Image (tube, rainbow, N blue to C red; front, side, top):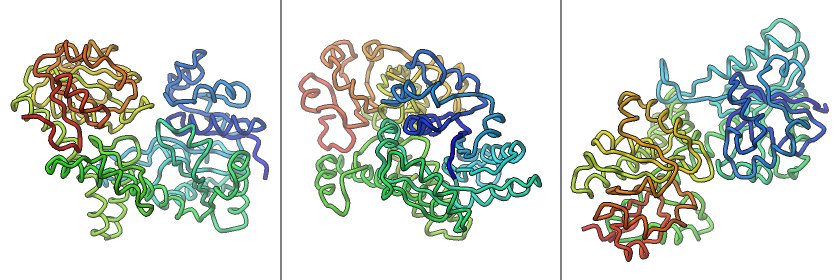
Length: 469
């Protein structure tokens, strides 16, 4: 079948960029992205493309080409569902904060609400595509809801997980390693898969489009993120050993990364991984394993999370111990709040948890991030519930100038690897800081020799002999 109209429910970090590229590459298909959040839709429709709700290199150029040609953003959810032949579900699936599976299982309430809305509105046969990260066998739950509407409409459920890295999402969409599509092993399922294959095949070679059964597709997404997160926690474990022995984690990573069986990717030591996927997906994998009685499997994957939490806590504790075992009343400047560079996403950012640890020690924090707005930073701290919103605003100051952030600071903590941090006048920063001037590089971003020469007491993740005596 030839698809001419697509609807995507959810205009977030996955739905917005994915549908923008899909529309750009398929000008003959009308793509409508819907969301009940009026503010978010208004931002997608903003005349100033710098006002898009998501910062992603290359995104505004793609939106500029396709928007109002065949790419539309709307709050008219039911109209878009009714008209579309193919519907992508790209809503948030956060970790549950209540009930059974709290803290581990994925919360599927938004997925279920979307499925019930499709079931209620649909008057013609539809292909429904899971785009959100979902536990194995969620497709069956969606199918059960859709097949019991009693209105005679037939649905095919496909799994099409995203493999996007924030900061490179547009390049990942334009030139992906692979596209994975899972469907039923029936003639109707095969036809639905081929309809989606044809859409991607307009710009992606067919050999990079993999088709599987639904269950394999769903599990592949969780497994891919778990493997990548495991690598980050593994190199972070080695970073602590490097600090204790005088080794340099970058040199270790370079040495093992040349092994073709291992490779160099995701071997960059840091203060810890963050983002919307890694922690959530591993916890989901742990929960599924425990639910099936696979306790050894669950314990294995849970250790990846434990190591990641340890790395963040260790970084904060090192700041406290180095500053003579107290940061009470001391100004700590945070450079970076996003979980990684080239995105304004702060979900599970290491900066949130490092800040929380330091605030517990009564530090005063000033934050500068080139893309994260003030309201997001306060919302992250408020969500923890450690202290009142009023306390967070009293103890944490957000500024728009890195030199203002670092002036009179006792210490600087680099929490995001923004390239611009490497271009700063570090001599000017040093001169305006309290002495001794401490710099804690949680991303191993800067050159230690130059900073040592300027007079900084410089500490970098995974580097021994940091001259902090």
